Amino acid sequence: MPSLRSAKDANALLPVYVIDPQSEGDTMHGFQRIGPIRKTFTLQTVYALKEHLQARGSDLLIIEGPSEIVIPELVDIYGVDSIHVELPFASEEAKRISKVKSNITIPIHHFESRTLFRENELPFTLDQLPDMFTEFRKLIEKSCGYAIQSCDDSPLPPFPIALKKHSLQSKMQEIEDSLIADPRAAFKAIGGELEGLKRLQYYLADTHAISTYKETRNGLIGDRYSSKFSPWLALGALSAKRIIESVNTYEQLFTANESTYWMKFELLWREFFQWTLKKHGDAFFRADGISGKKQLVNHDSQKIENWRLGNTPDRFVNANMKELLHTGFMSNRGRQNVASYFVHNLQQDWRIGAAWFESQLIDYDVASNWGNWMYVAGVGNDPRQDRVFNTKKQAEMYDPDGAFQDLWLYDHMAKNER
Image 1 (cartoon, rainbow, N blue to C red):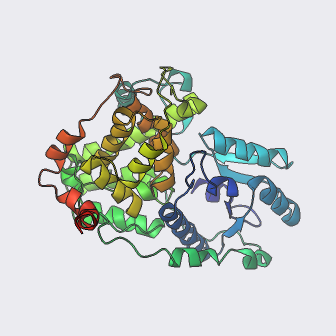
Image 2 (image 1 turned 90 degrees about the vertical axis):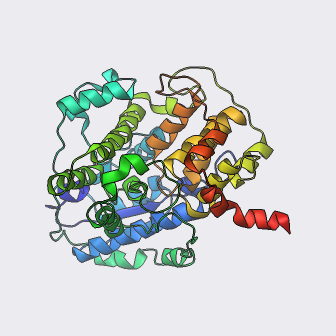
């Protein structure tokens, strides 16, 4: 954890997690910015971090309020002399930090932790970042090695004792009230680093499922068809570097094949979207994306509602949307199909679909989510414009016996038959 390493020599350390109301309100489209399942997973992760810090002699202050007010108040009250925070690539988060900075006089130190490489380690400058993934991947694989991520569990500087009473223990009740998981879920997702490490161990050494990843990655049912590292990766409970190191170790101890390579290949896709977001900024959130191509901005409330709740005429789309609604997760194959259906069949503004995914996905990552939606909408990095999925054929190919559709639509079907 770069922020902890940089603060280890301090006389005192105050780790803070701010629950900012700006992050939890409704979107302009009328639904929650962070849905209940995503919120539960996030809170689980936060409290797991709190326990980890306590084990190292520190703690985590969990506090509610606008960041630009809460942080300066803590700086003034406790004589904080520097702030260490992750460097955000998205403009909204960057603006929030700028507001904090305008209300304090102490320095803010940024660190990069979401990416495999620091910007100065890339084999090109940011303005020379390739527009196409294949060129990006080839340059990275040719020029960049993967740095080893060291683990440090040594004691941390003391935490201000007076602050312990201010942590929002009441938030734990929100987690406990939301712990009933849907039994149809592809896997059990619990937030926190230890749970992420368990998943990593399970997918690699325990089951060797990674050895067939390339063949199974388009699956729809079960906990082994894909890695499902993304929820922990999205919140920093697992890092891309840790996953790469674990895959490299697996290759040395067991086998190196096309599937183990493909896991690293997919992490490079994630890396590509992170740097593409940093390069293009707010273009990620415009209707014409980074391509500048004019795009539909339709907003049919009924079509959007039917798609959101899985009530469209398409059973395959509905099954995937109900899985998302009830579990906060959806397969990669499902995401591509429902996004294509929303944009090309329903002809709705792709940004509304991206915002719904932001609300629901426990593995929401701003760069990957909006980058992939642009890609499907034909306004992103895809050299093929108008990438349209035939959902009927996709269902026949990836759910030939209808098992996935029956799994998620059975209750709906039974209700309609009564």
